Length: 126
Image (tube, rainbow, N blue to C red):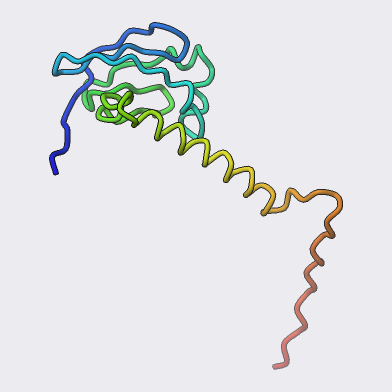
């Protein structure tokens, strides 16, 4: 299997959450990030002023934000070939899973009975 090796060489903000990205092989991609802005690193990028603080990291040759968020250059390169849609679907599943987890860990409705209180352990015989 051949792994594509590309680097981001530049970008331009062309709209809300949308960047035109240039790659070292001369290709350009326009990426709308809005569908994937969820989770610990990407949710803060929903603030458009924060999103617009994007920069090109000269060491790793990709886009980065002040909170450490970044994207693999290959993912950006293949965004329109399904990588972007796959990320968006993962975040939708993550969000649904998070809602279910909230229910499972105790955000119960008022109709459910609370769990019994723990009783102190009996003293041990010596």
